[in-house]
Amino acid sequence: MSAELIPSILDLRHRLAEVRRAGRVIGFVPTMGALHAGHGSLIEMARQQTDCVVVSIFVNPTQFNQQKDYDLYPRPLAEDLEFCSARGVDIVFAPAVEEMYPRTQLVFVDVLRVTEHLCGKFRPGHFRGVTTVVLKLLNIVQPDRAYFGEKDAQQLAAIGRMVADLDLPVQIVAVPTVREADGLALSSRNRRLSPAERRIAPIVHRALQVAEEQIAAGATDPQQVKTKALATFHPFPQIRVEYLEIVDPLEMQPVERLDGPVRVAAAVWLGATRLIDNLLCRPATGQIERFT
Ligand code: PAF
Image (cartoon, rainbow, N blue to C red):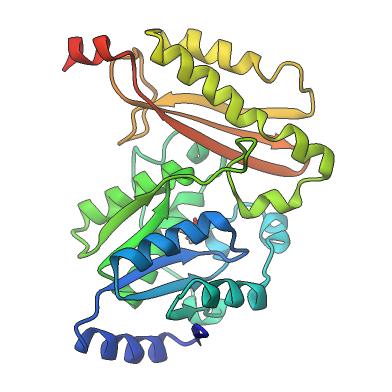
């Protein structure tokens, strides 16, 4: 069956009021479109856990800090609709910019601390745009559960904290990163890579694995781990590393010692494409036992 396309907030509210009256549990997958198997796994989990799956497709201008990046963002709406229909999505909410931002937006949500490092340092205003639009979308859809990928770990942490600190009545579900066979994390931006860049791109995952292996083997100094992981990029002058950091998984603060679970996260530029990835890493078992 085809997914129902609804571009208007009011129409969506009326439609979802019926769904709620029928006692159906609503699962929500917010996206910016250009859907791929990573989104497919969010949809699949929502399908398994809820009765009515809503996917939003909205390229949110307020989270782009470069106009060119916003302009170049792929918008294959017809393909995305087919993608959703084939996966049993019930409703696709695809509003225009004027529908979401009918007037100058004067209210924003800023999640402090969590958005301070990693991407927050290099993309000023990005997370404020993300958390604000996600709060708007959550208020519009009012889902029981909302699904986000672990690939955007800092986004996931910021949204989780927003929901907790603002007592929003929704359960946030984290869905594992989907990777190509060579390790490259799926992203809508991957389609911008040239064939030569695509061949190099899995090195980002490899660098994170180098860090993961050292942490699992008992390394305690994050600086040493970072230096070795960064060395993975040395044979690839085409890659410009924006950051490679080791942070605590909740507040995303750089750690001084490796004595608990951490996220190793990286952002790199490959030509004109920015790639991000991360791994949740745990120290050697003996160490966890010593510190807990
Ligand atoms: O992860 C994304 O695609 C976007 O940041 C989101 C959560 C849909 C908000 O625009």
